Length: 511
Image (cartoon, rainbow, N blue to C red):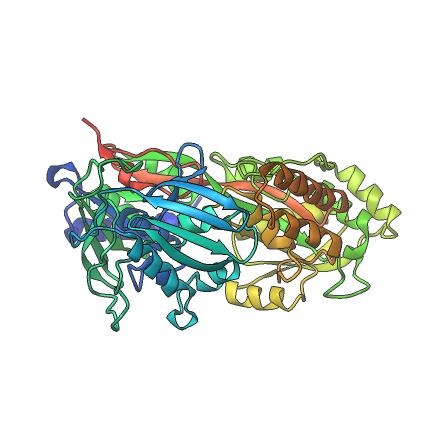
């Protein structure tokens, strides 16, 4: 009997042969204290203010610091370049900078640089990647001392520290006064400085010896880092085996299983804030007469899907089935609303009660993880539904979704790595969100209220109220959290992140 090799295995074997015939382009490993990391996607800039890619976030956490950061252990927002902060009232935030912080060119960080950075972001002509978001809540920033500033908000906004931590790296005053060339070295204040940037090929970093000693990030152990752009998954695997790279990220579970079984490869599994879910058109946007507008139909679909089996056998790793429309690690992700255990019999009963004893036909849209989408379709067809899976590219998916022409869709959301329900529940059920198919104005008002108070207790109560409503009305089918797989050389020690975003400044060589 002929044995057929999976495409990934064939690709890997070809790539491994190629790696054996041609030497790696960059030395990797502890011998020259250089950590070489594979990026699947190319960056066109090393400036986080002009990048929205996940790769840009990983890089920026090495080359830049903001006023705050996400503590890797607690996922709380803590001072970084800031020494301290104080809410004067609901719309005024005072921040004092740490002393002794220097840019990579040796110049000191002052309040003038902070004011310059945020004035640049607030300027619509600057066209930064996060400018629109920041302008939505920030009115202005003023210098109150050599190392102190005051932020004035347009409204109470509990995610201010999040945006200051994730979105805005600090820039030296005058950085953008002239046309800047993305190929030039970035002048940040992070623990590593850029020494070479070749767009689409590689980024070379060197440890910044002038990094401030009292930084919560501490002093990194590895001297040099190189990020090589290797789009092909099989080539990445071959380079790891041949010593051309030290670390692969975002590795699919089946690849991680196969490659980690080979000598000279270690595997790490970690959590991810990303969640998978189904959205159902309860609001009748795609069709006012859609069966999805019937609560019992939506409840039936929730009971028809075997979340636990899909999570255990397809997503795998540290993934977990989730009961509500948020990630369990996110602040405010708590609900007393109903859960929907897998129960095909109950699903059929609910469909009959809804007037569909023989089921009905509908389209399920998806753009990623086709094997999971197909498993969902199998579950739904097992209770009598006729499902037409429309598996399309992301740009097509986004266009149709944004036009509210989907009866149901399978998607995922990473919340930008934010451990707060505002980044999941808030984004998907806001009144003006193209992702919101609930048609529930009261729910949107509750979500908005949670985003307009800085009182943690009140925010928890409001998110609980919103999540209860989402569960009661079965607007979503919450599915699972994702798992992150990393393949690496056994010589490398790397703490596994809880939010799916590796902090490479924590990497070290094993003794």
